[in-house]
Length: 98
Image 1 (tube, rainbow, N blue to C red):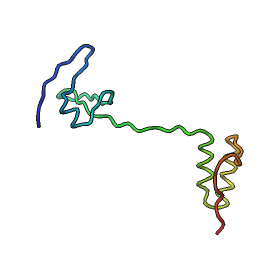
Image 2: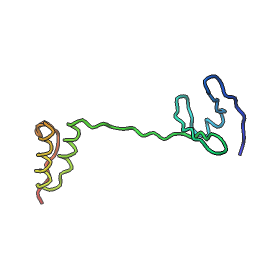
Image 3: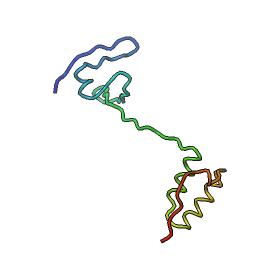
Image 4: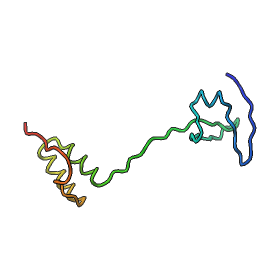
């Protein structure tokens, strides 16, 4: 384990040495978690995941396309109508009869 020294700048900015930035994939603008520990402050990369907000149309598409039986499909149609959407306007396939 290699230890490097760095300074704290104005407004508390800390420069992480280039070798450590490369090793941990820290680029400009990367998010890190600053965690208080008994022995000091631990900085570690933060994990972020994209979040998709579903529009009513996208919800309707999920409901209609995930129907497996005719009963599922009938229920999905009712749910889509509750969203205020005409099911005919949503691209989907009806479940096949077996």
